[in-house]
Amino acid sequence: MTKFSRRDFLKTSTVAGAGFLVASGNQKKIARASALQSVAVAGVGVGGKGAGDIQQAGLFGKVVALCDVDKGTLASMGENFPDAKRYVDFRDMFAEMGDKFDALTCSTTDHMHTVITAMGLKAKKHCYTQKPLTRTIGEARYLSNLAKAAGVCTQMGNQGSTDDTLRKNAAQYRAGILGEIKEVHVMTNRPIWPQGPNRDMTLEKFSKQIREDDPDIAEDEIAEKKAQIDAALEKVEWDLWLGTAPKREYWPGLYHTFAWRGWWDFGTGALGDMACHNVNMIFKGLELKNPTSVVATSSGHDFNSFPAQSISKFEFPANSWRGPLTFYWYDSSQTPAPELGKKYGFDFEDVNGTFVIGEKGAGYNGTFHAEGGAEIPRLPEEQTDFVLAPTDEKAADADARHKLEWFTAIWEGKPEICWSNFPNHAGPLTETILLGNLAIWTAAEPGKWGEKVEWDAENLIVKNLDSLKTPGVAELVRPKYQPGYENIEV
Image 1 (tube, rainbow, N blue to C red):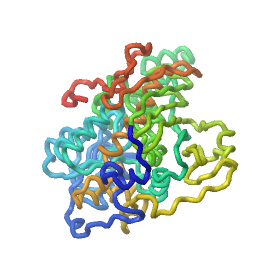
Image 2: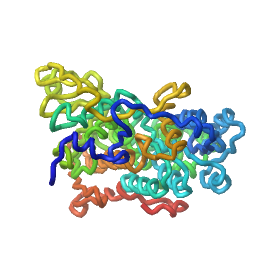
Image 3: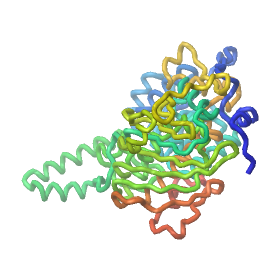
């Protein structure tokens, strides 16, 4: 394989492929004349993070439709946009309003991202979809291909992408501040939601337990729980919430509204949720695409709920401008061995961090040290390539600025303006990080390394699938959907 220098790479990369839009430090200017043309926006999932997404979209466009399976959430957001039509089923929204909006925000549970976003892309709607882009690897490739074919402007909701420092740090790594990279270690304090085995609950299970624990009050407690469930189901369309996932019983607080992240059927655990943020910079800086294998260890899980903690180890091959490297992921406030950081004068106080070891030294959260702790000066910015995200008076924080970048792309008709556009960044990033969940799936036994997953990234194939003893791995590549969503072929 022909090797090129980083400078050669920077000089020859296209805008879309490299993701850096113009030369060092330049900031994208907004086409103000185009901005006067109102973009009509529909929002699916308008509570929690979705509330911020649709309200920020409303800063730059006109919100014409709202959809949420939680009727209380829908009514509350409707007060902010009284002229917007309201729906509980996104399919009804598309049927009635499909010709009346230009752009879509999708901020639902992970397992519904694909079917909703795909409907938007097929209708040539510009799409802003929350991270991770999808629940499974094949879905990420599917949405990337749809977005490219549609030619629309897309953005995944890892809002830290608009941070100036993040972009400059990515450019430092790409320009070779540490020389050849050997290892990458990324950490998070997540999960902050419940995860771990034996957490499911049904009314039958609850009734049995309470009758054994306290038979004197059992029937009153059971009746009270039934009433609580019935009241909740008057507000939440549970079958629509389940959507593509297998049927299961509603239980208060266990899934809706936030704890769904810790369930395999609905979320992607700490890795899927947080790596879109914490891996974002170094993914861009080192082009961490197409890993060849991954293996993991965990605190144990039951194939229903994610483990409370895990560590994953990925192997990446060389590409045209850097050598092979090993990547480690740590969640639940785990870190690399402390002595590894101390060798370069770092301690891992910030457990939401990135630690990179290269031939010239190490980098930790944007600071670079040689062995022994001496600081390595940052490369002059004129030797690196990056572009700052657009900003204006409405973009008061990184999240709003992320929406502004999306709208700027729409106004100018240039999908490549978005850092986290689906084909070039969000899709490949999601594919990479979700591969770790295949390994975590095999690491069900506490404290032991699971089976190594050998990966053919080009064809989305587990090369050693036939030899794996753990069943169900293939469905984390290409999922099976419940009836009613057959129009998706991942």
